[in-house]
Amino acid sequence: MAAGKTMKDLQREVDTYISQFKEGYFSPLAMLARMTEELGELAREVNHYYGEKPKKSTETEKAIEEELGDLLFVIICFANSLQIDLEEAHDIVMNKFNTRDKNRWTRIEQD
Image (cartoon, rainbow, N blue to C red; front, side, top):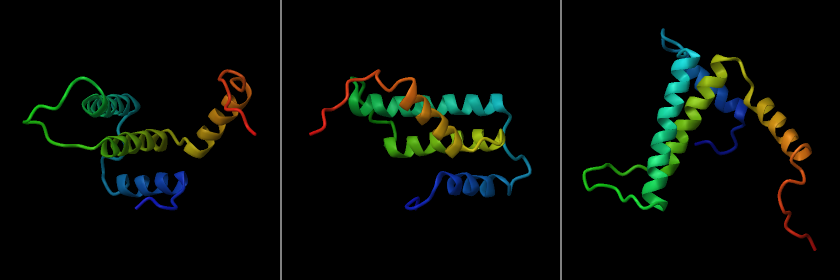
């Protein structure tokens, strides 16, 4: 269960898992290909649930949650392999959104 886990916890958990194998992390290009593959699988599931393309009767049932989990795992692997702290990366992005893009969207009026 991921309840109460920080991003650092998730990164450590993935690193512990990957570290038990001689092969270790894939190269950045292989990781990018894997990420693209997982994103495609997520897109397919979203299209089945919300789009105009129903599943074939022969296709197995997968949840969007599972596909997001697969994508998150690969993103964490990618970050770990490049020694990127995802909490720091998140803080950088949020700072950008809260400064550069602070007036980009229409805010919900507060009472």
